[in-house]
Length: 269
Image 1: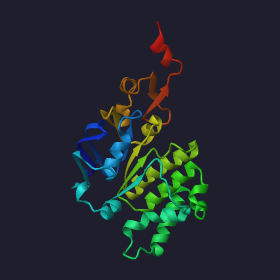
Image 2: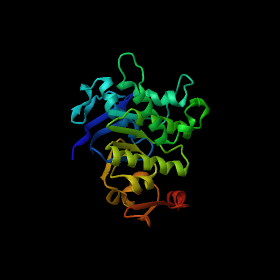
Image 3: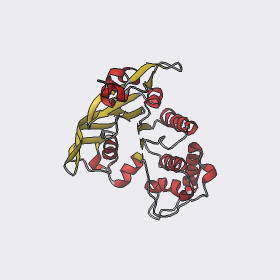
């Protein structure tokens, strides 16, 4: 299977503080790849390196078999779409205007959208469930609605790879499963490689083809959910009692928190 993203020996520091150490990973094309790990484990930094928002100073990243540094900004934007946790907007754009920004890498010198671009924008809004908000200003929307707008913008970009940083964090249960189903649809029907950061281990178990577990800036484990989401591994990384059993919905694990044990385990005499 071709490799969409390959990272080799990535390292990164902020103000002399190491946040990634010797990260090597391959993301196969056309897969749903989910990155998990505790807060501060390097997940967002890894994603920003993969999309070119941070410079690669240590190690190497190849996108579709080509070093990321050899892509022009325009060509990289045609290949990868990125949905961050928060997108500050300096102006009060409408939802449709924000979504149509996804067409920018594909427009000509004058930057005018044609009928096909507008049709792709409408389709992207429909897929993300925000078509009824097209005329609303972004600053009039809830955080969850804004997140779905940025997902629509990424879809409108027509990328080969989509990177998302906790896209379900601000969503209710119904919209969480809708977004995850949408990512599965983009993978299956359009062949898009989806790379997502998630704190929800059960969503990762249900949808991921492959999981990367980070801890303290390094790789703590990698593999399919059935082998990686094992309680000895997870308890060691997350530092809290967990129970892992088989989900009644399918052949994948289900992770439970164990209440009332955290403080008792640490302060028992």
